[in-house]
Length: 306
Image (tube, rainbow, N blue to C red; front, side, top):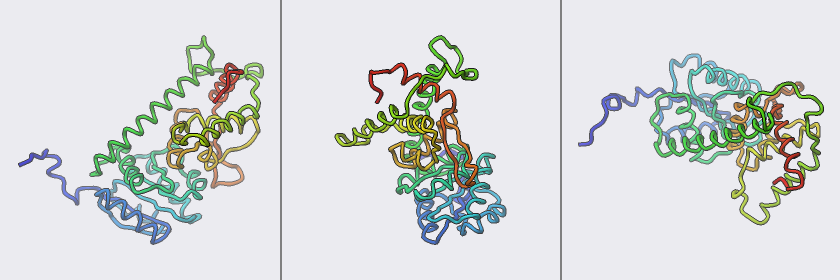
């Protein structure tokens, strides 16, 4: 007979904190229900978006909440996302928000620097992995597929390591070869190397040109593509909403949003609320990242930046 650890043996199905489910339509709720059941989680119940906030108040405990959106629900959706973003930041539960691509901007505007897992047009494997990642990040008990959890954890570690490498490189560039600290003082006009927007646009065009001759996924580098897009926008005095930056990353939107969140956490990107539209945020380069990129282009010179 196989032995089972005492703490696992004493756990029953009813001991597992449930998942709350809310969706923008019956079809959306049914799709999310299938994901939760496939993840071996206990479903507490499902409600329309309009009732979700009041149901959260009544629920004693939950591992997570799954929000499935296939349409814009306006004010009730905004209120729910704001509430969930705050609760996840406070460690009350984990959360997954599954959306279609047309909802990226209004949803991202409500989900700031929190542990909410935001997935876009995701397949079944990505959806299950998102629930595993959300619960694992929140350090909450769960019985999810070990394979999905392990693979997702490895992917997140790789993402974190890559962003840390980029952050370290940009810090060295922005501070100059003799600097010992990542922080720099206020920039003077003469400190900013002259880089033209057309130069950066040419680099972006050259990077996209590779997909004509080789499989595009061979060159997936979303962090660099987003950095270049934001620099080009800064030089052209343009504002970049989240949805546009996801397109510039040249990877699936879910992947781009994870990179975006990490780059914000690493203080390479800054989120700015749209003063004219409360349901949209813009993304721009942090001053240090901007200076580092300009110095990079200045040093690369005629070598060619791709």
